[in-house]
Image (cartoon, rainbow, N blue to C red; front, side, top):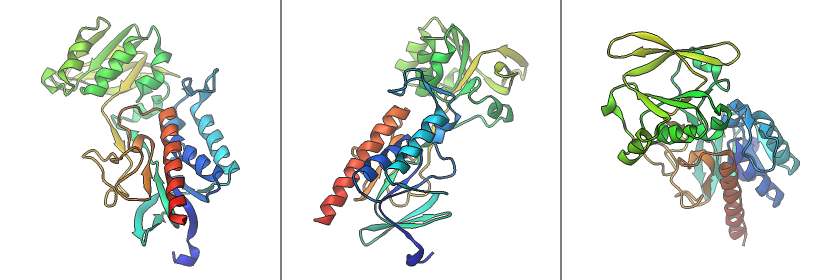
Length: 313
């Protein structure tokens, strides 16, 4: 694509989740031209979230896909241009940026990376069937829906321990499934001891899920003991996969500083490259909520707007 065919914009936003749409609204409403690359999964993780009850302003709750559709319409209302496809590379040229896209490329004066992160899953075919219907990757988001239910957590790190404690506030019982023995626990000692002290939580070691089973919703799991190879069934209402997240930063790691797991390193929302900002799960390994992502998108847009105003002086 040559320069004549390139899209031009003041702000190029990469990602169409809460952070990206929020940034688009704030920059476009401030009078800057905005181009937003929606990526391969517009709406991000919220498109697989049935009910969102903790996003302020929706007392009756809202479906994840509907929240993202409304966000999309709001961005369009203020003039943001939405583009299909992913950005595969960011190129810095004379204090501007070329965003090389699968379907459309653009020359922009500032960049907001809001590509999010994806939960790591077990990779079972039956897991896909029950996502949003008993299988979840976010205890904070979905734990409330399992009040007085029996649930399981898969994982051995601090995230799994935190999820177990969160779920114990609602569920009748929480079973943590660990693939290897107790020596495989990767959580900090204080978190592990805190979980062991909770009467609602128990551990089953050397065990992994082979299959998720149910009708409309998850009803049980088939598990394998990795020492005896014994296969058994476990009735369960919900399973929370807590084996980590993977930030979507492969396309920009040669330009912006990332940590060992791929999360963008920021000061606030600023990256190591002047004019490039990051927002949402792509730089947030702690909170990972729709509302915190939207907040970071707002901050990234405000900082990008100030950056552009300074350049124009």
